[in-house]
Image 1 (cartoon, rainbow, N blue to C red):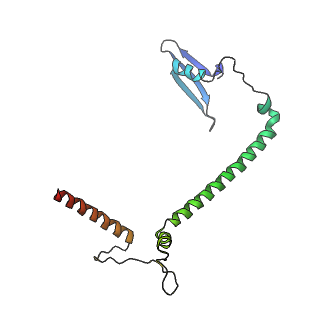
Image 2: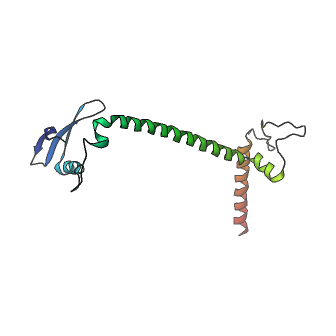
Image 3: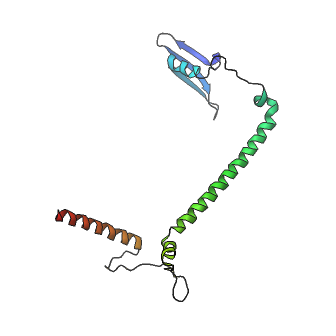
Length: 162
């Protein structure tokens, strides 16, 4: 930080007034804070003893801008490859989830496709029938409700029998 950015130092209150320009909109931001917090922020950027810093040599030099641009290009290709791998993994996961579907498990266990009609056509699921007269057309919700009700009644019977 340049010394010219320090506006004022108040020895009585132990505060320091300084400013910086925000990069987003180049607006000047004035900051007033305690000396201790200011020193913590400044000392964070001081290198340790015998630590060498390079500014105008090697990768940091202006001559190496071509190398830097090439590296950025290679990194963007790497990012694209990472996205392709993620999509491939996602496809494998979807395939495994389909394999876990009840139809797959029924075929694997009983060597019979539950959706295959005797005439050879694949049946399409439309709706299920509720034998207790509910207006529920969703088989999964109906089944879950009945399972919960059965569990509850089983727990009640266990309490009564004890």
